[in-house]
Image (cartoon, rainbow, N blue to C red; front, side, top):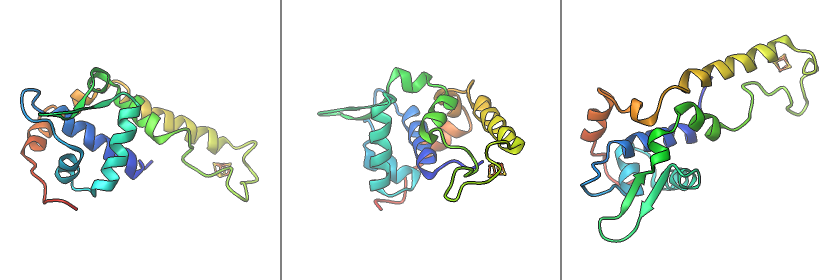
Length: 148
Ligand code: SF4
């Protein structure tokens, strides 16, 4: 199973925000994009979605920037990935033309179960868990290669 690029970028963003020093300058969308090495426009869409989900908030004014909300910090990675990936199946049984087996396919059922097992593996993890060593220290050290 392969995650969409959008979900991958969202996970990179929340991991970067999870290692922000609350007492220091908060990162902007542009800074997060630079650090995780993606175009600003892609990251802006990702941050907007994460704000709608209540995972990220933007603080305005001096010292403003992006921060994880309490929900974002405690959120289950399984929930976040499920939400971002949507309800889609891993195979396109209902495409045009649809697969003739779709009404009675044991493979389809098995793939749904496998997909659910994939998400269930991520359920016990929080965003904070993802930035434990060695990931967190590496994230803090990333400075990016400049604007894209
Ligand atoms: S064979 Fe089964 S899993 Fe594959 S496309 Fe057809 S219905 Fe879906």
